[in-house]
Length: 96
Image 1 (cartoon, rainbow, N blue to C red):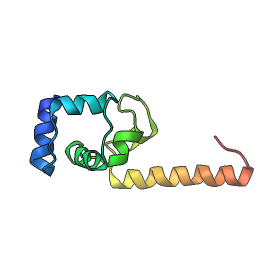
Image 2 (cartoon, helix red, strand yellow; image 1 turned 135 degrees about the vertical axis):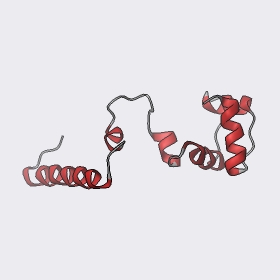
Image 3 (cartoon, one colour; image 1 turned 120 degrees about the vertical axis):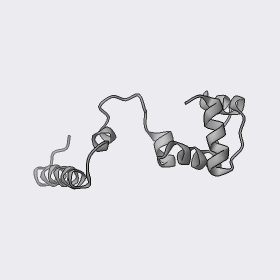
């Protein structure tokens, strides 16, 4: 999505106003982001604010990508699998 389209959607969906130039400075780390911008951007990107600052969208095979496309039953199965691994680590005193 272009910066122009993003700032347009930002204003349309959230009422948050920012210019493409300001957005560019934030993206490049030359201008700090605000909590309001972070929350508004999350609405446009359909994610949580934490996703924007904590996840590398270019990371192929990252753990959170395992959830993409799973149905609710599969998510429950994955959660149980992780729980079993954690319990085994606690039982054996190992990790990783």
